[in-house]
Every structure is written in structure tokens, then in C-alpha cells.
Image (cartoon, rainbow, N blue to C red; front, side, top):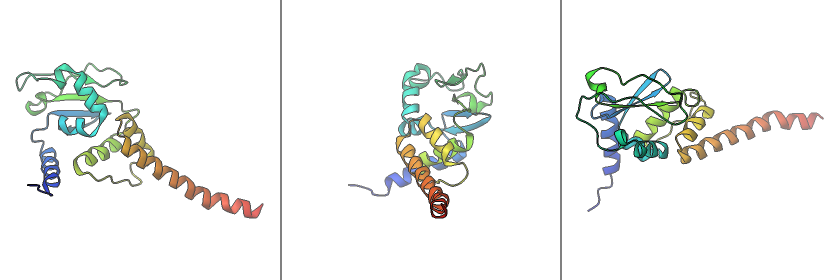
Length: 171
């Protein structure tokens, strides 16, 4: 028997858990911003995270006992850091992943993280589509990359129509 609203309820439950910090098992560091998340959601929505966690035996495989401190894992292409996970009791049981803040901005990552938990992409002026495109490219979220490219191409055509058309008529 199929339950057609099950996936929507599952996403809602995971979204609520993330807001509460309940069962979140990782922290994504982007610049100075920290984002709590569930590794399973990240790995399911982003080939980057899937590959990252599957290649990290400490992070992708079985974890040690709860409450043990885990080193900060630095994603490929990210300047290495000697920082460790935050020392609070909740955060110390979580793995941390550092994302290159020069490529991925915190607002763009936050928008993509919201997408992972909602299934809806809210492209607006902030963060700019160029930032979302860079973040989605970095995370290998190819459907989002295509949407951003279409948005930017459409914007380019609209700008060309509003400026280029008048120049031709005048000349």
C-alpha cells in the first residue's frame, strides 16, 4: 500500500529535526558560519558529500562512542585547518566538515541546505544566482547548476534586449 504524502512528511520531520538540532550528526563550516545537518541528507542530495563521506572512514563508516571528539575533516580544495569540532556536549559528538568559503558563500550554502530539506529552491536576488551556481557546482548538485545557468542566461538575454535593441535602432 502506497502512502502518497510519506515523502513530504519525511522531509518535514527532517527539517524540524534540523531546526531543533535533534539527531544532527554533522556541522558544515562555511567561512565563519556553522550549519547543523544530517549526513544522510547531505549525502543523498549532493554527490560531493556522498563522495566525501564514503571516502572518510572515520566520518563515513562506523563512528566511535558518542561524546568522543572527532577531528575537523577538511573537504578537498579547502585550506587545511587545525581546528577541532566545537567543544559543547552536543557539537562534540558531531563530525565537522569545512567548505571552502572563497568558493561557497554562507548564504548560498544556506539556500542549498534549505533546498535539501524542503525540495524547493528559492532563487532571489540574495544570494545572487552566481553565488548559488558556484556553490551548487562545488557540491556537484547538477540540477541546481542547470537551473542557475538558465536563470543567468535568461537575465543576460533580458539585459541584452533592454540595452542592445536600442543601440541598433539608433545606429
